[in-house]
Image (cartoon, rainbow, N blue to C red; front, side, top):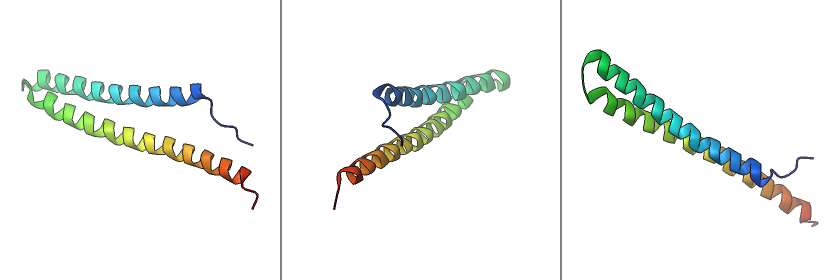
Length: 86
């Protein structure tokens, strides 16, 4: 029988999601900066890569939060079924 995740596990999952968002954006910013230096196009690639990094990061953020929400809903459903004797 699966037990409810502890509050520490839930907290860790949410912190991980935030760190993943920050790292994704940071990597795209660094990549854009590198491309700007390589091709001597000052803010062009930085702006493009930052926008792409934000889009990718927020896509993964929404996907991961949906997964966490589904886990919580399944737990609540099991809890209701456990106490519903009818």
